[in-house]
Image (cartoon, rainbow over all chains, first blue to last red; front, top):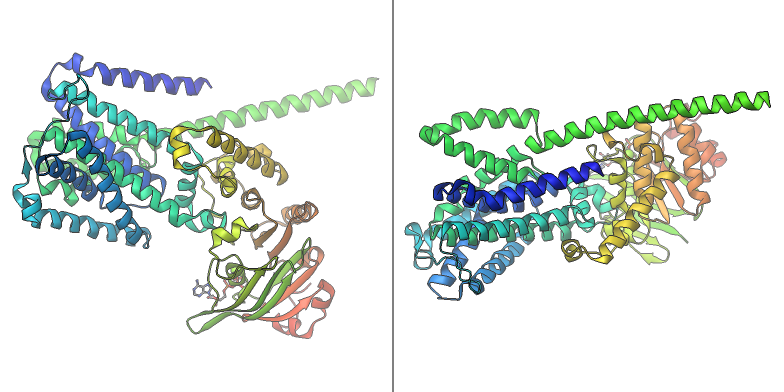
Length: 343
Length: 254
Ligand SMILES: Nc1ncnc2c1ncn2[C@@H]1O[C@H](COP(=O)(O)OP(=O)(O)OP(=O)(O)O)[C@@H](O)[C@H]1O
Ligand SMILES: [Mg+2]
């Protein structure tokens, strides 16, 4: 119980910090970077549900991110649709495409699934890149509007955008938290652990996997739509494979299959790569080895490493207390036996 | 007839793993399947539990043809099974491993999860209660909060039983439940199977430990090269010519 309260406190402090962050820095550039990081985190949560909790590594994630972004951009610029209507439609379009692609790609498993979705992701990229008349091809789309007003609230300053994205991030975290801590979450974890076993205890693995796939594309689409109206310019490279690998790197460093992993990994890496900007692409010479070492020694990332450490310590404590209890019981029995004898 | 197979056959390419097997499992009894390595015992389980589709033949459970049902549907009907190799989720506690076993009896979906509905909370409690109940049944209450990875081989077998029992089955198929377990512990597992039967769960097991089978089973089927070569009570099996031959002069039957 004390532990839970502590965890709650930590979360409360973090949320409070996120809320006051713009006032602390007052630096539009930092607010911009943080907003972008939040957008990535939303996408990483989607990837985490699928790859981390259900065990299906989709490499088409950036593709769905791009579908969300392009849907919003096209609906607001070419179709001149109301922003929030376009926003909702963008999420629906991404999820429906996710459903169709999921239906096909989930016929494969393990590394075949990863390779298959890698190809799917590349095809999405190619379609966006080559369909000049619709997507503007390599030139991309410009003039995407900022999020529309909600009542009196406008979203045309960095700070207001920051809060909007923060709102969606907290929404994402809440939804993912609740899913993971429910019977559905247990179902997904059972599938990750052993699909065969899951099936024999009566789990409809096909349907559950499809549901997770769709949710994961939903979050990718949400992140993409937010990205489009935040940056207000998009090109096909947002659907390129490097984005998928960035997201995956954030997830692995933070901790795949953990709830805090996406936040930790993304913020840490976005921040570190900002600091190492002067190194340009040579950054990878630092990231590469660190990532390799991490995967070898902490396969569940920073967060997973911490959780394992805590679980071990807790178990040790429990064993200790069990031992004490047993000893007490034995001595109690001895005394009662002794008193019986006396009596 | 509780559960029966008719002309059940499974071919893997040119290899006939199960060949025309007719077998009836008696309700409320301990049924055993024995046979040399590669005889097709596990494959037989896979066919009955819907894990592999048979090449031909039928599986009938309580009068219903379940031959072409997917394994999760068969589990819903009350057929549980364990695997030859126990694959638990080592990083989770024993209790967490078992809770999901009752999932098939619940209805809450993703929306319930996101909205944290009453139904979800109720069903979560239901699953947890069931897990605690079956862990007590198999005698693992003490280790419920330990990580599954830290358990002994025998305890892991018991967790696998518990997971199967959490599905509220009418019949449970156990694939080599006592493999890799010492004689004392084997005794304990045998008692556990008898306890299952006393509680109204029919047991069907595959086992290589003959002394255990001969004491435990009410009915035995012997498979060899995919074919049923004998069926009967332990005494009948022990005196059966074909069985003795299949086991190389019967040295394995002690
Ligand atoms: N999925 C599969 N694909 C191809 N061949 C298989 C498959 N499963 C089993 N077999 C083959 O079917 C035959 C029977 O195997 P099975 O596992 O049923 O034997 P078993 O009686 O359980 O043996 P053991 O006592 O060693 O567990 C073997 O020849 C095996 O190689
Ligand atoms: Mg076998």
